[in-house]
Length: 396
Ligand SMILES: *Cc1c(COP(=O)(O)O)cnc(C)c1O
Image 1 (tube, rainbow, N blue to C red):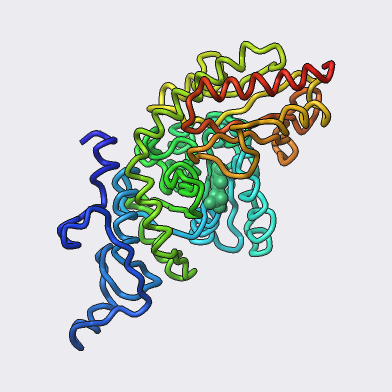
Image 2: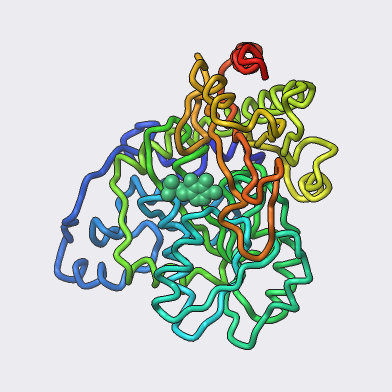
């Protein structure tokens, strides 16, 4: 079955719900047993759709979990209340005091805050590594290294990691691997097929797709399943059924939305590349991008999130304010992957420690990140063109 078909069928059993097409919202804490024998069996139930207690999930949750596990090619999926929790809960599930973690220097900055804060306090040491290191990560492995964490591409700097090479080194050394796979979604990259143990989605982004849900998911390989499941159980991770329902609803249209994000993103990126104000477009699906070779080798498509670097003389507050304050379509705000386009300034190099990422003569870099939504790309280009004109009117 092709992926687009799976996004429609996976995890749904209408005839188990009186023919209702979408798995309904089941609200529950208590789930009643039929009999004493049934009650006793509940406690030791192992099936992924077993009903035990609300915290462990209802059919609404199980439906989304089954769909995500199928799409990522994993043994099981585990939901939590945010994408960040889907990063921290697996790390807490696999790491103990005295362990060592290798973390990509390009990681999502709240991931770094967790490593430098709570993980350090619990006695786990983190070494940040150059995301472009590939198989060279072998030289950073210590005797107590337990997890290698990847994010590809990084969500601000878009460096493509050689995931198969890193996973091969880790598997050789008996080290667990995890990846933040939010940019690609399970449709465009399937980390478990390349030897990764845990694939993480901030389902808040493309999977939900409508800027109205906070949700995370971690999908485990067969080998990682029991450890991940136990960690989530012990932590008491739990998600409201309405959020699971909305994410499942978003998932049903993921394939068509992603095609549009991909095509419109490339259109806008190519237009931006031709503008005199833009010195760099950072987008792994563009043929001249340094990450393009890996993107083409490993990924089946591209999302609509990329960054541009403006000319140094335009990276000042007056010019940026002139540009950003007049957009009609582009919104400014955290997150991405929704139907609406966003533009956000950032200095992603500021939070690096193992590598530097200078742009525009600034050590922290200065980029504008664009999340291209589902509007007509011609209208988005018009909005950007007007933004550049406001900059020019300043005499820049
Ligand atoms: C947004 C984001 C997260 C966190 O997701 P939340 O649902 O906002 O907690 C994790 N990783 C990446 C790459 C993200 O962009």
